[in-house]
Amino acid sequence: NAGVTQTPKFQVLKTGQSMTLQCAQDMNHNSMYWYRQDPGMGLRLIYYSASEGTTDKGEVPNGYNVSRLNKREFSLRLESAAPSQTSVYFCASSASSGGSYEQYFGPGTRLTVT
Amino acid sequence: GQSLEQPSEVTAVEGAIVQINCTYQTSGFYGLSWYQQHDGGAPTFLSYNALDGLEETGRFSSFLSRSDSYGYLLLQELQMKDSASYFCAVSFNTGGFKTIFGAGTRLFVKA
Image (tube, rainbow over all chains, first blue to last red):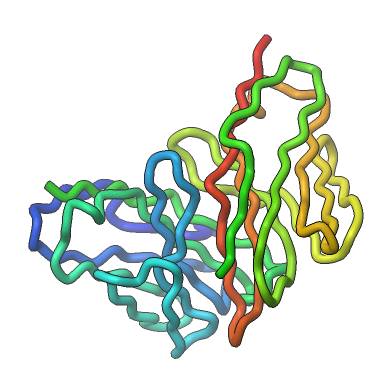
């Protein structure tokens, strides 16, 4: 099992460019999440998908869109990148969105917007 | 809204015991989790408490007091490899389950 995989691992964008971060899990999990982590801060939830076919906003959704393509895949799109979106992005999955289910994290995507 | 507070840094000696506290404010509280993250790595799950009391998993234990909106992570027999950031995370249900993370506590273990 690969667990949670993310592509790309690193990305540099210019302001105004767009890109999609890809995430896939092979654990048959129902719920998937996108977080960003800035230096000295915890993980902030951008969007999540409690189950296939549903998505919902987290704490910091502005400037992002998501697509739950199927049960395995959950992508995050930046339509017009801004320097404030420079961060490390983590995708995670869990069996269910209920709090007792541990989240498994991917290795992260390090994004720099210049 | 929801908020969590935990100390930004803790330093301890190898072999010692350290406690990392977490206080939270949230409606629809469901449970408190702890995650460990080494520099450059991804967070990994350590423990989860939904009910009051102590949960023990090897050298790590986690405690919750729902009435005090307080929990802690206890690390015993500290090892150098325990140097990492530790995050508490609150799960709550306000029309849908969500989890929010604290800012993290950086633990330095000295020889």
